[in-house]
Length: 193
Image (cartoon, rainbow, N blue to C red; front, side, top):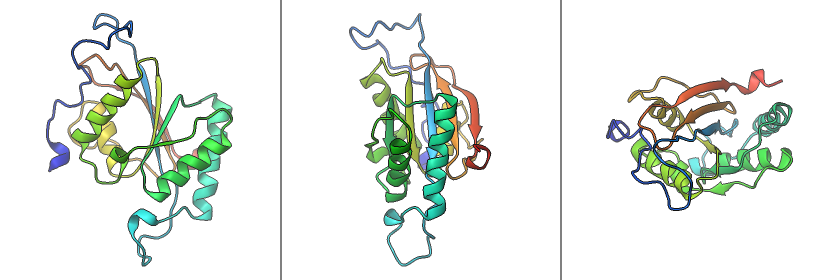
């Protein structure tokens, strides 16, 4: 399948570091990547385009719960990216409005449902390279894309994680290293309190 193409694309190694970044291949700087699956949305059997499905009341509450969890844990995005689908944008917006000092989400097409994993990896690499000072990048997206992306970053060409709605997963990667990332934690919304 297109998602399984380019098995070595879990590497972020891109040659020379950006000029003036202070980075070099001998001093890897880990980046924390946070993946938030969109919260519960309207039923997909409703007569409406999938991209327009909005959050339900339960989903709005889940997005607020994630924000409260992050505030209690001292977790704050430096950059917040979101899929353009309504349910992801609403999750990201509710989250950012409820978390003090959180940036507003930036809508990126590569987090859209169905983006091939190698393409998403290339855009993720570009997002990290665009701002090497960012050590915390947050993404709001969809299944199975998030599980595929996380699995590839962890070094597996096949899915090894499954991301539940409104759950938050954190991994670290060293952008200039061919080594796979490390899963730090994954917390489903139901356990966030």
